[in-house]
Length: 458
Image (tube, rainbow, N blue to C red; front, side, top):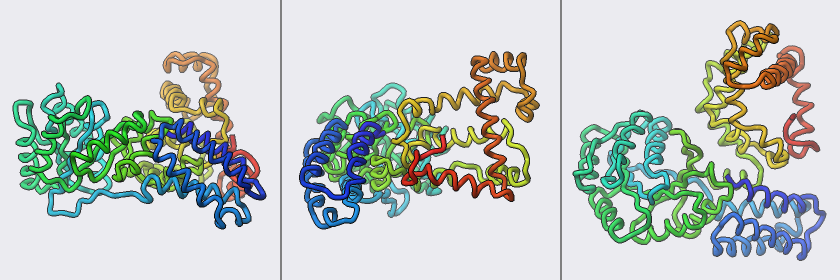
C-alpha cells in the first residue's frame, strides 16, 4: 500500500534533508510536489488543500526555518500532519457494556464485508480472548449465510444459524438473545450489502440498528475505490450513526487515497485495516505507524508485535540454541525459517515495515517476492531428509529429480544451493564466542539508514 505515494514524497523530501537552509522558493516547490503526489494518490481535494495549508503555515515558522536541520524539520512536519489527517491515534473498539457487546457491520457489495466480519471475530477471539458469535442477516445474496458459516468454522468462532426465509430484524434480535443466553462476550451482526446506497437498504439497516442497539456500528469500505470510499462512508453516516470504519484490500491499493481521506471527510476513525486475504489479515489502524510507512521510515512496532504473535517461541529458541552449540545450519532449518516468514504474511509484508525500503531499486524489489519463497520451499520439499541435512551430496541426477519434483528448472536448484552456501557461511560468522555477531553488526552499521550506504546488506 502507498507505494507510489511513498516514492513521490520520499524523493521530494530527500532533496531537502541535506539543505543548509530553506527558502520560500524551495518550500513552494516542495509543497507543489506534495500536492501532486496526494492528488495522484486519489486523496480527496478538500483534504489535500487543508493538508498543504497546514504544512505551509508550519514550514515558514520558527520550528522549521530556525532549525539547525531545516530539511529534516520539514519532514517531521509532514509526518505530523499525515498523522493528524488520519486521526492522531488508534481508536479501539468500545466493548465496555453488559455482555454481549453488539457490533453491527455494514458496507456495499464487494467491499469485503463478510470476510471482515470473520477477520474481526478471529482478532477478538485470539488477541482479546473474547467469546464471539457471528450472524448473517443477508437474505438476498445467494450463499451469503453459508459463506459466513464456513468462515466462522475456519476462524474458530460461534455461528448463529439463519435462513433466507426469515426477516433480517428477526434474525438479528434472535442472535443477540442467543448470545446473551450462551454468555458470549461479543455478537457481530453482518448485514446485506448493496451495489449502491438506496432508501430500501437504509430503511432495513436502520430497523436492525434500532432493534439491537449496537455499541459499535462499523462501515466497511474498499480502499481501492480511493476518495469514493470516503464519500460513500459519509453518505452512509448521514443515515446511520457510524462509530468507525474498516478499510479493506489495502494490499491491492498502491495509492492510499482512502486512508488519507476517510477520517477528514467522515469525521469517523479508521479502526481496522485489511492487509491480505487470510483470516488473520486484519490489523488495528495506527495513524502514526501508517504515516511512518508512507515516508519510508518503516513500522518496527507493528513488525515486533507480529513476530511476538506469529513466530513460534519454542522453535525460535531451539534454532538459537543450535547455532549457539555450533551445529550446522541446514536446509531443514532454512525451510522452517521460510514457514515462519510465511506465517507473518510473507516477505512483502515484512519489507513494507522496514525503514529505507524505498532506497532499494525497483528491479531488486521485484525479485524479492512471496512467489520466489514458495518456489524455494517447493524445491526443499522435493529433497530427501538426507539431502536437506547434507546439501553437498546433491549432484547431477539428484538435481534433475528435485527440479522435476518441484516443477522448477535445474538452474533454480543450482541458484538455491549457491544462495544457501552463502547463508551457511554467514551463519558461521554469527556463532557466539567468536565475536562474529559483533563484527557483522559493525559491517552492517554502515549500511543502515544514516550510515552512508544502502539500508540492507544485499
